Length: 131
Length: 360
Image 1 (cartoon, rainbow over the protein chains, first blue to last red):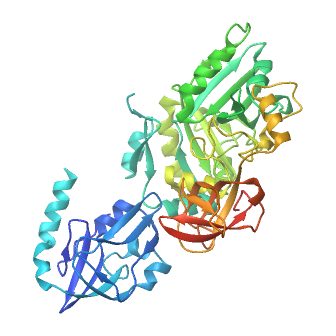
Image 2: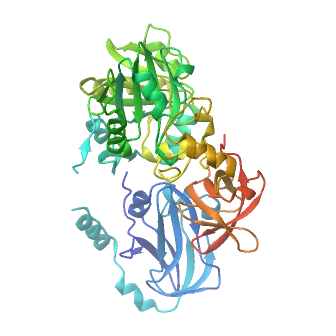
């Protein structure tokens, strides 16, 4: 069931991914996260224009069995949210790295990226957790 | 108390199930998708491991009278080879368990009880059976495995696999499946046509694999506890420990259809009758949300002025409805279909409306 972890993004310890595009970044949850959650049935995202702070809870992903917080992997201002995922939460399960993206932000502190994990460090973390 | 494995554990592992502990038993929560499993049961056929359920065998000349005393429904409505949904109450008319009573004829009965209540039910039965001669009660829970086949195609599958006519709805009979004797009851916990198959632990794995293989052409899917819960809720069925417990009465729980008040007496009858005259303090009703969200057990319910009306007992994600559904205990005056209510879902006030108890 495990999808390959994309090389083109960085990861938080809370299983969010972040794809850098200059001073902007798109954010979602990893394949590991969607698999652990099970069928996502509801997503709550903050509003466009809101400022988010690295590490703070910004929304909720709810599966059949549980509610899980979404944490901001980096700080910034929200410039877009994925309305498709609100209408069709199962996109997060089907395509967590593509159509299942959650929000897009304008970063306020690019240096924060150094505190996130690259693909191989994230993979290592998952392997450690699995033990 | 240690955790048990059912006789089907190896099957679940092979199928890649996500296992969870429930009532001291390791059971599949889901295989790959709770939603896909739920849909399979509604559209085709699902197969469940329900070996954790409890089975008590009751017999003897005094068993009919005993059962009519400790259960709310009347077994005398049954012909041999038929079953009924019934409740076991304490002296305060609180529900100790909800269960199915199977009648085999000749003073022989079986009770199928909730896994979480096996010990409590057994203790109660023994207490009530004290000093009653010509009454035998046996806890056969560990001797039986149980497989549930549920869905519109379940009869079609079984018809192919057995030469005997299938039992009618709520009927129970022994059938030979691949030459193995299985007790097949046409009962279930999903709201679909289906069968609950009681069989020996030694035959369970073989029969499960056999049904799974033969069921492929009918669209069979292995289903776990998550789908079992969303299916029963959609069908308006209650879950003991969540919607009903020893502090709720059949009147409050909207279960009076399982009570025969014409019986001379049964445990809890006097308190229940009093409550019927006085009126209940709360009623279990269905609701559906009018906005996105999922109501969960314990979430509070209000009216437009902020007055507390009750709380959610079970909630689920939308399957056939546009938004989430659930069951809730509310003040009786508000128990009207179409009544608007508000539910506090993690700090957000969500609009909802009272519905019938069933959603399909």
